[in-house]
Length: 77
Image (cartoon, rainbow, N blue to C red):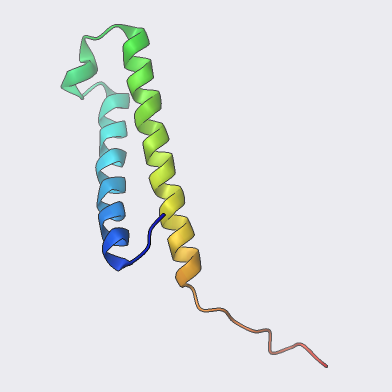
């Protein structure tokens, strides 16, 4: 869980890094997996996508906590 602005910035950077890695893996440009066994390649891609998903969830959670709470001015007593 992201606790402060510094952790938020670090998580954003990690999200960008993992997003690029997923793109490279999907396109076959990631050299480390290009010649691997398909089962191992799939496992690595699944794990990388999972980390990316978790990072994105953390960012959304942090961003939702940072939004100011608004009141509905149309409410009547």
